Length: 430
Ligand code: PMP
Image (cartoon, rainbow, N blue to C red; front, side, top):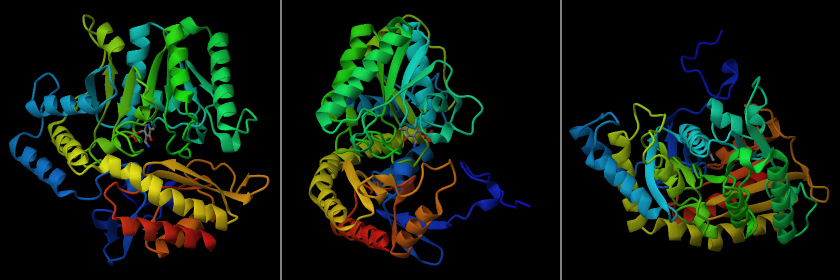
């Protein structure tokens, strides 16, 4: 008998064993018994500002005292301000923001906008990708989380993105990987018929599938291919947006302007559920005189918007995005390079800003993964063991497939970051 009143996502209900969390502050969280962990997980990559940032908590309180709910058909200053601030930091050419209540909904609406605006049915999506668990977002997700579903992705055509460590293109340099991945995409567009393709959707830096940072020139190449054929480029920045990769958006790392950019998580550190789509000029122009067929009761929720206004203010005022870039380059990268040099179980380390992955292997020479590609919701016992060892050492990373991901809050204390990475290394040593 299952007695848990909560139905748990991605889980066999009888087998859930979760930690009960009592509170958090900054980069730390704890349970009732007072055990504390350094949050290198950031609650699924959310907590750019860490737990309980006082400015954001105060903004939510203040807004709650004034107005908690407002239908999207009304205007509110806080909603306008949130959209205005997002546009100030969004890639050039962005015109407006559709607010949703999370990442998957943002992807749903980006897909719909692309299909309606172009009048074309197909979406090209990457194998190593995650875009959300609703029908359309799962339809473009490439990773094994879709495997148990009876059907996914009518109109979706999947392609391979760059991943030099496990190259689908037998490439041995970044330049080869980039050129061959672009050539593969170009051929796919030709086979599928460019005039039938509404959009290519990419995570500019692939997040939960292993922090895959593409070679320089790849994203610009995808942009150019899209432009050649009137195909829209959707950047899914739900995990990468608002500083995680050391830039406001990961697309900025290569100065690429997507037509549609989805966001969630980092926009307000997840304090109130929210996400959205930054709409570029081409799609904005399409809907200037034609009604957009879609909406959500909680679109532009006042508490969410207040938290966004405060969060963007903190990201700016505290210089957290530049800090993430600096900490990634000067603290995390050298520490992880050192781990890779010392520990045979580490196949590759990679990342940018404060998004990192340690890929574990059974054999360095053959690059055989430490554990097989996992079935959704069933992490391999060896990876469960590694997470347990990390927890015993006071650090809580994000573990998926044969990887340990480090997504520390952007506010993390530098000494805590150094100590945290060292503890992860010690946990991997056994
Ligand atoms: N896109 C990406 C890139 C994500 O990482 C996620 C969540 N991990 C989503 C979409 C889905 O967001 P949500 O869980 O808020 O629906």
